[in-house]
Image 1 (tube, rainbow, N blue to C red):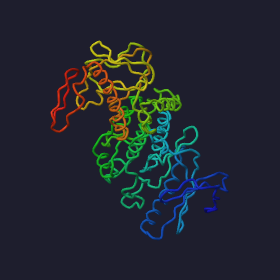
Image 2 (cartoon, helix red, strand yellow; image 1 turned 90 degrees about the vertical axis):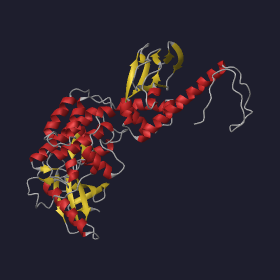
Image 3 (cartoon, rainbow, N blue to C red; image 1 turned 180 degrees about the horizontal axis):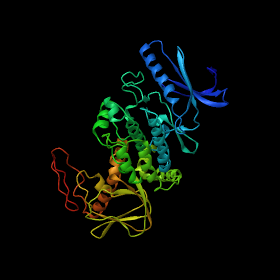
Image 4 (cartoon, helix red, strand yellow; image 1 turned 180 degrees about the vertical axis):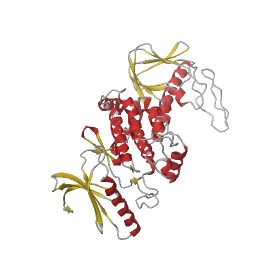
Length: 456
């Protein structure tokens, strides 16, 4: 396409299931605009009618919204075979690019962006508009982290009679970000957008959704019936104050949820002033590269190492600091990044561990007991990666399996070394295997550790 109405096409910006967006020049205003084009299919008249409704709705709704954090719409044209919408061009990125655990934005930037989204939703609500499809892909970020909420095609105009409103379409929205009342098909108010924005905030902070499932039916059940985990359980480095904010934003009880975006923004601002505005990206990258070089993480995928970073705390320990003690009960474990740790039992040295070795993994792996049977003490300044066991339990199944397998392999290697030491202190074997496993008589060893496998 060279032109769309009066707009001259520069290039294609993106393509979705129902629309294509182009960067265009606006000859009347000497500016660049984003033009979204929808073609109405001939093979499905019902779908075409639905798309026309959504498109007209976006045009009508957008003309009423004038806020710096909402994408402005300049023109909305509906033809017989297609329709197009000319809107503000946002030279930036969508939050969808920063939902993965290895692509997260620094915490202070996330809170600042969501704060602006709260104010935008509050402004829309005061105009009687509910978005109904808040998700990362519909939130653009321009220079200076200026948030821009886009795509009001599914918006609900509260100022109309909903019984006759042709734009009120049940079952719209993205399931993972839907509020419980939206899933149930109940009447909606501004609080449904607050819930969806809470889901987005949760994902931007942790790299995962608050509710996950392998199929949509299970996902819907969990959204309606279960509580989301605390974000600090998934990322111990987050401030505790975010737990209360997300709990209130994701409340299933409408009376307990934030009443509007302004309320949520106020609480977010209180947390934002408590944190440093340093860009943690460079530090995160350095930490990632450090773990990538350790032998312990050789078999880990990059995405799994990023998950480890999010559920861990880096601790710089002085010499003669006890990491774990005999008799304690906990599941603390971690990896030595640098330094040396001595493991002892009843005051006798068992071994000394160097960088890349796990500490405390036995209690973590044990299926029933978290009691400690050895003591671990630093011998020199030591950098220790403490992995939060509770947060790890909420991580991906792939990471859990990889971590358990790697720890088990290390334990087996250590057990083999212990066996060599025990064998060196034992007496010579009586005879080198003249019998068979099934039925032939065998001699009992005359010394060493008297171990024998007993048939089940």
